Structure formats: C-alpha cells, structure tokens
Amino acid sequence: PQCKVNSMMMGPALLLTSMRTSTTGGTKGAPPISIDDLYGLCFLAEPSIRPPVERQPRPMFDTDIGLNEVVIYLNGGLHSCNDKVSEDFVLHMFEASVIFFPRDATSKPQEFRDILKSEGGTDELPQLWVQGKLVGSGSELKDFDRVWDLCSPARRAWPRDGPYQLGFYNRQGVTRSDQVIGTQ
Image (cartoon, rainbow, N blue to C red):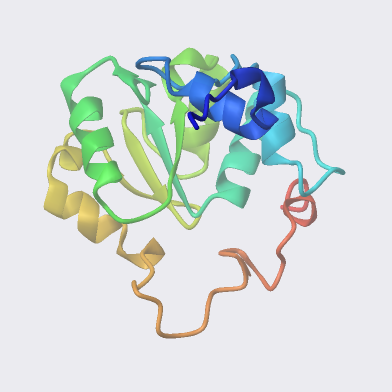
C-alpha cells in the first residue's frame, strides 16, 4: 500500500514549517516593526514605563546615562558613521566584550551637545562614557587596545564564576528601570 501525504491533512504547525522553508534570504516571516512596537517589546516586562520616542535633550541624556553602564555618542548612526574615527570606534565597541548603548549625537540639537559638555564631555565626537563619566573621546578611540582598556570597569568575567551583579551600576539591587528613570 502506498501512503500519500495530503498537505491539507497536516497539522497547522507542520504545514507552516514546510511553507516557511520555501522562502529564501532575509528574515523569514518577520513583519516590519515600528519604533512603538520596539518600545513595547523593550518595556513588556515593565508596563509602567513607556518613555516618549523623542525626549527633550536633558531627559534623554539622563536616561542614557542612568540606564546604561556604557554609552557611546557618535558622529552619525551606529551603522552609518559620518567619519572614519567613529566607524573604527564602533567596530572596537562590538569587540570590547561589554554591553553598550549608542546615540547619534549629531542628529540631536545643539542643546544636547551642550549638556554633554556641561556633564564632563567635550566638543569632539565620538565619546565613550562608562559608569556616568566620560572616559575617552575623539581620535584616541581609533585604537582598539585603548577602547578595550577604557571599557574594563564595565566588563564582566565569562564564564561567570562569581555572583551576578544585581541591579543597575548606579543603583545596586534595583532591577526595574522605572525605579531609575527620573530619580537621578
């Protein structure tokens, strides 16, 4: 006896799997995502937090520094830098074994760059901030070894053989971002 498989008789999961494998390239089956969807995913576990997509310069800086142990301010976007120094710096950051938050400082108003300067930054981009302080800027960030050293305070040993750090770098034990945002 010969066994024929009718695709209509397959279970829905099997049918979807066989249909999905026929596509080529790209992200399979992923719908386009809006910035609001992205914020929704980021704050899914913390429903009381939903920052506006575009914040004013001061809250933007405070949130960048408050939530992220390592922040990089670039001349251009993460994947579209406007100069060779920023481009090299981004590549070094991806290999520096730290989690970092990027911000295109050139697309922000002058007031934002003035805040960077008033908080200890400089006029030159890119800038590397670790644990709320500027640690490097400009052409010194072209050198991988220099970037690696500057990021050392934020690097965690792997595999982890000690206790995990619980909480934000500036709020030990606090694990919810809504308890960090706006409390600087």
